[in-house]
Length: 437
Image 1 (cartoon, rainbow, N blue to C red):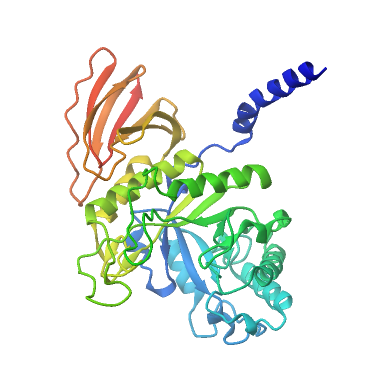
Image 2: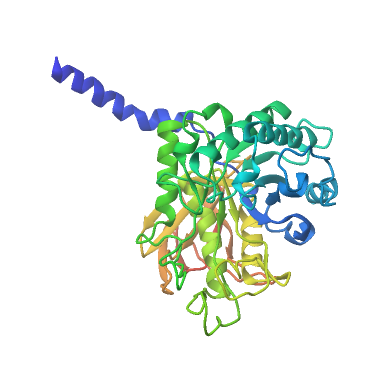
């Protein structure tokens, strides 16, 4: 009997990967996957339109009600005079899909005298004013908090549950997310997933922030995205595993990831005297490679932090795609990725050899006869190599190298032979466009 049970159990376990894969939604097209973090009136939608189709706003909810969360809102106007119709309307005009991070981290916890009533009222008013079913459908999703580390878990859970109920009542079609989460204990920058356990009907997707930190203070040194010695991708895998165990079928969004790349030296003294950034080229490489690796892991959306910087030599002070609103190499690299893979979705891994080479295949959303293969060195040490690619019955229709400027980067001259092609690669991904013969 025990042997029979073991065989049955083993049989079911062998089927689980296939059943899980069948239950998953298709990977998103890259134009539905690539996002950027903006900020209210500072974001310039026309400038960033070439880089992505998704934008996340840090929406301070105290702008809407002032000092007291119980104060009724006056949407579409914020109480401080900002016209959200003008702000979010300009984003939609440029083709963006907007996610609003309803940020209350800056509000003292004691201000919530009746947390449930105030949070629910705000959520319902916001969704009715801007949700996808409203007369002004400007916001498709809303996050309840950003990184509310100053709130204890019990109060955050109360506010989350109530605001989520309000958002759902205001517009059942709006996508609801919690704040940045972690599968470990709550901290300054993320709340534990335990804060939303048992509240699966209140949210539609999970949310996390990940940075490729190899060290914290005083250097804040970041490594390359594929580095197996850091927690960057491990945190994503752990959240996906938690999702599979506790919130099946709910997508996972990475709403912050990025690298500092500035031109100024850090100050001689103070908290950031030993701060380290990366070069402009490395920022571009790491962002583009992160998008592809996050898509490969099964993340549904990924938003770069940040849209612009003022070249400040400090942690998160030079993470923009633009510097003083002038495009950095990362701007051109991300724009090129969108132009290359916007109509494609992740298909499969061809090779994942840590420290040597990564090769991923992407397939066109409407025409499976078209594919793009991306190949790169998954390192931060300038390693190069040559990859022997099987074209699998396809013709080579074009070759492009990741851009670092508005001018197209020349791809390597390739000569397929016998259905294969030798592809030289380095840390800037090369993209091969394939079409079935």
